[in-house]
Amino acid sequence: MAHTSSEILDGLAEIVAEETGLPTDTVTAEKSFTDDLDIDSLSMMTIVTHAEDKFGVRIPDDEVKNLTTVGDAVTYIEGAQS
Amino acid sequence: MSARALRQGAPVLHSRILGIGGERGSRAVTNDEVAGPIDSSDEWIRQRTGIVTRRRATDDVEVLDLAEAAARRAMDAAGVTGAEIDTIILSTITYYHQTPSGAAVLADRLGASPAAAYDISAACAGYAYGVGQADALVRAGAARHVLVIGAEKLSDIIDPTDRSISFLLGDGAGAVVVGPSDTPGIGPTVWGSDGSRSQAIRQTHSWKELRQDPDLGWPTLRQDGPTVFKWASFQMAPVAAKAMAEAGVEPQDIQVFAPHQANMRIIDQMVKQLGLPEHVVVARDIAETGNTSAASIPLALDRLLAEGQARSGDLALQIGFGAGLVYAAQVVVLP
Image 1 (cartoon, rainbow over the protein chains, first blue to last red):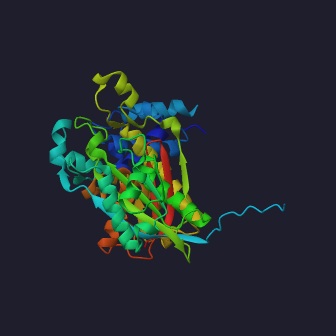
Image 2 (spheres, each protein chain N blue to C red; image 1 turned 90 degrees about the horizontal axis):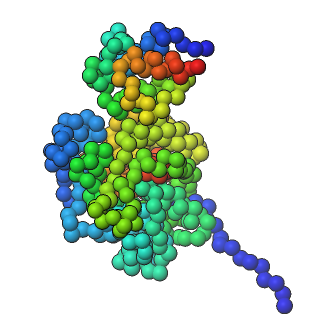
Image 3 (cartoon, one colour; image 1 turned 180 degrees about the horizontal axis):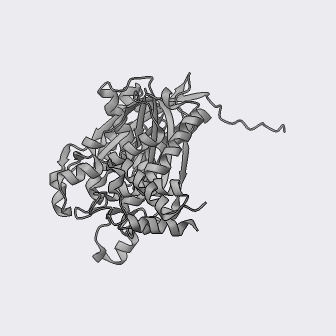
């Protein structure tokens, strides 16, 4: 069953919190992975891998650089589900 | 005239690693030394890679010199003379002759002629590929003492301005002697390749392209770092787990985990993915030696044994992975 965008945001926040140690409530849609959350390219790949597993989607490596904000990732995952 | 029955070589039941030896480049190159041309810093390199120094050889040292030094130490440790070595497998990507092989030259230098000798190209998986072959050759009765060497002088193919891989790389060689054993010493090798991702770690251009256009300059290495990180961290852990399963052991039975020393972040992630217990000693030679490709696993094991962190008889899970993409893993008993 497809996840709603709010479920995806919550799930992504848990994944980001696990990887970075940041509280989940700091992971909001407008936050930039690199500029606001201080996530480097390798941590981003870890987050992407866990998101793929959690939401049952495939996020190609070439696509990852386009996911600037948490909201970008939510939108991509939501679209990739269908 | 009576027909004669064909006789095939007699197999032996078990093989094991009889001795390990290593040789590192003599110069410790600091992060500060490599950071300038890539507009980076000691802190950035440590945080991204876990590397504090990488060891590089001086200009007068060739890859076969590193290989010979490591091989002699492995033979001494194994108590095997050159005359007793009947097969030499050299894995390297930095011996600049299409032919003859570096292994044949080494056989002569080591007093091992007329040992069968050949080079393999399996990049950072080369040592584990070689151990897999040596195990099979010994058990099939095709060889008695196989010298497997991973040797690289990667400083020959770096671009100091490249931010993708050059700053990780070091020079060194690691070697093992594999021979017959009364008890099982090398588990089944789980190995493979994925050529659809041949460009993930690559040479900038081929030697032939250089010949056609000398302006291209000397080829150097590049990698798609995040792609390789994801592949190595998350797809190699299941390969290592399969090597344990095929060897009939569980993570709690392992004393040492020796993955290819590519990046400390990959090592940490693999340990997490594999769920290795606290007691497992994890090889982290990359911090001081850098990434030495095919040499990294035997160099790391040699250090653990020399420092007393690992002991003879310990079960070690080893896995190599790299350009190809290629990978190989097996569980071995340390000599």
